[in-house]
Length: 235
Ligand code: CTP
Ligand code: MG
Image (cartoon, rainbow, N blue to C red):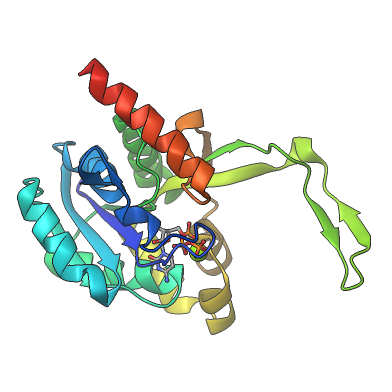
């Protein structure tokens, strides 16, 4: 199985509200994204990793990749939305590595993903066309109308939170992006939905570990920082 990775890293972290995007926040002298890259780079069977980032950070990321010896990494200019950044990363990855069987997509701001989870997602994607991971919902999901009145409450036992990484047969994710409407491309965030809606592939959803959280708010950053520091002390 030939596998490549796309790491979208072109967001500006509005909800974090810090001077620099959260993926570049330094923990023990390394930007957060370096920990995420390392999770994939150390896996011998992963052929290449494309990072899509904003123009201002391309040179810095290239320098960082050479400083940390990330030889399997390319850095490209991402897009205005997450789907744009992933799609651009996918095209670049296909240009660099012909005939990959599986493409894994993972957010640059999820630095705690394990090799086991990456392997399971890649294998299930290879077998079934697409695969992702989930975690139980913490809160009940409700909907309200424009008058802020409650209109719906979902049964929490039927729903889960979609996390990352996700994996796809290369032909499935390429076709999903080729076929999807601009409405889904511009406003959606879920690659597995595009695979289901436009290619008819119902991704396998595996149970994910609690370590898969996305760094979104400052509290998430501090939690990731404390786990990463503790892991470094153990090495
Ligand atoms: N992302 C991207 N291109 C974009 C927007 C987001 O590559 N135009 C990436 C982010 O860099 C991040 C991942 O998608 O690695 C998950 O997105 P999110 O957590 O929403 O990050 P931000 O968009 O940076 O944060 P916010 O929504 O708070 O602005
Ligand atoms: Mg965002």
